[in-house]
Length: 68
Image (cartoon, rainbow, N blue to C red; front, side, top):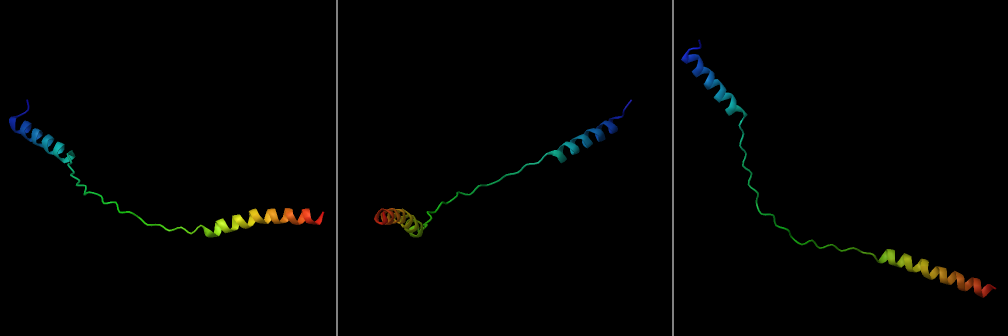
């Protein structure tokens, strides 16, 4: 039979092996501060090009009508 000492050592070894697998992590999350962001976008160039294309088509149609 197994002696009491062997059982004690076996129990201690099992306890230590289980304790080695145990992990505990504590993470603290600080409050997040969201600040407003100011963004300036210049779209004048795109609008200007679009207007040139639009009025350019009208000018071409007017020139063609004037030539006929």
